[in-house]
Length: 129
Image 1 (cartoon, rainbow, N blue to C red):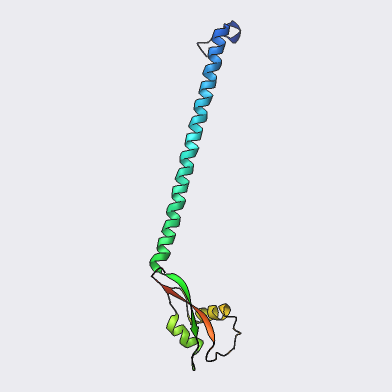
Image 2 (cartoon, rainbow, N blue to C red):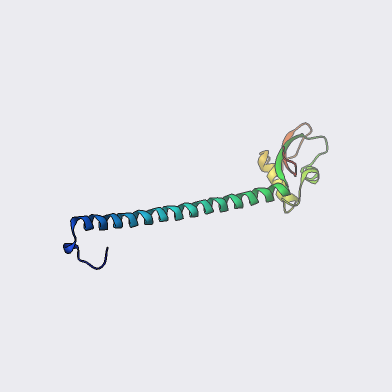
């Protein structure tokens, strides 16, 4: 408010001016707050996008997981199939890979494979199909 005059001593015109000043300051603060929140939200979105992009790129650089169907031939075992398709960058050992194959194909623990049986097996490739 102008100077240090009391409200009771101000004219109607001066009171309207003071109220206008107060509203103006409030609007400025509101715009400032909205601008700050918008900038912060934009920064968060950019940060999330960057993190997501880095995660996608790191996965893409190391390969994509795919599945293929195979027909079991005479004499094939899960161990032979694991030798052919396993990628040790993604599986700690053959047991983990074979467990995934069994789980995906609903095979029992000691179930034998037979010639002509259809199995789905996972594999990794750096190419994007």
